[in-house]
Length: 347
Image 1 (tube, rainbow, N blue to C red):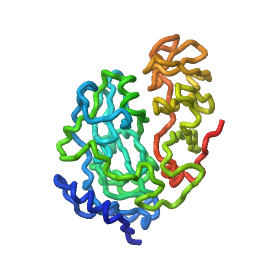
Image 2 (cartoon, helix red, strand yellow; image 1 turned 60 degrees about the horizontal axis):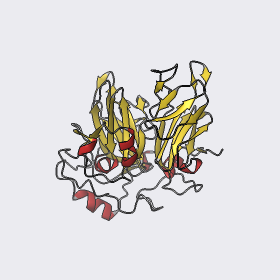
Image 3 (cartoon, one colour; image 1 turned 90 degrees about the vertical axis):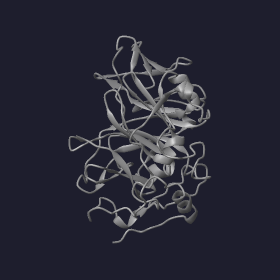
């Protein structure tokens, strides 16, 4: 079956005007075997690497950042004391950042069409590689490819869906998504991805018009769910084989806590939700929120205090970390498209 090519003329014209540094040939479809219906793998228009990944990221201090507004979203990653922020206004134009932190080689993969971001380990076949933007989409979601084997991967399926690595799953790292205003309160001394990317882009301009707030999609999906607005941002976390979605309506303006199968900390004012496993060393912990102590967000019944990355900063477990389920922030429609049995958490 041939690939169905669906595009918006305005969308393509816009993207083509930005492709001055990269080749824009039509992306190859790889080998004939796919884990998804091949006729649902769509050509997004720009071509392979037409949306250029950032392979040599530069960073600046928080105080040096001028292009972000308080409400701009960022993705945050902590590798020990090496704490980095990757702003959406840059990721909207590049989608992938191949980075080396203190102890990890990570690909930060963000899809503007589904609003989903996650970190992947860049080791493929025991070799460090980089990921690029294939130009292909499945269920409106980015299909990265690795530059070692040229295999295609699905971000939201979290596995290779075509090529030599078909079926393989990357080691993933959960990222914190919040606003620039909140991030400055959390980590004022962190590093921030710079607009010095080597590409000429207007990073203060959102390239998809009214897409973030409208119910419309540019590309079709194979399953919809009308329980929430398609573009409502939710936190989706895997609990075994189940995917559970949490909404901001569960949380107060101040930090509050849901103690369920996970402990989920959230705040509407901080624009923040994050999930952790409650069991540590065989003990199920009970958590309560802490106010005005960022980056510390909660304490447990043993007297430990935990930061936003799940690290105990005081108490008898100081130095230990809570494990995290695989989780992503993103648009409701995206998780529903991939996981029709998606559970919407209700207290």
